[in-house]
Image (cartoon, rainbow, N blue to C red; front, side, top):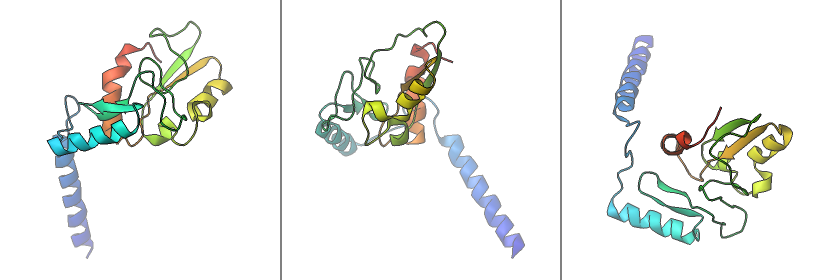
Length: 155
């Protein structure tokens, strides 16, 4: 029985490794059918511009947008914020870029209630830029990071 379990575990590890080798780390990892593209476009249209179609990510945050319910606001660079941030890190500040899904984005709370906002209030010598997007997978968050992180001076 133990030999059978060991074989099954080894096979699962081998299949996982083979799959991971095929997952692209750059370029366009999302190949959508026309039907899927239309569905994504419909979903982001219903969001009244806060979320917009992205050919590389499926959807992302629009620039200078407010969500339909008024809870979420984005800045001119297309990430969740009530203000603009310079590309260069301000002197004496530590800057952290935050990428992820709805937890990072702070779904269901206003901009002044996200964990990034509270972190900045707690540590005024730090900036936390919120690049989270609702519904993102780990791959989408990684691709968004690869697309935008290099634009900002960061720690």
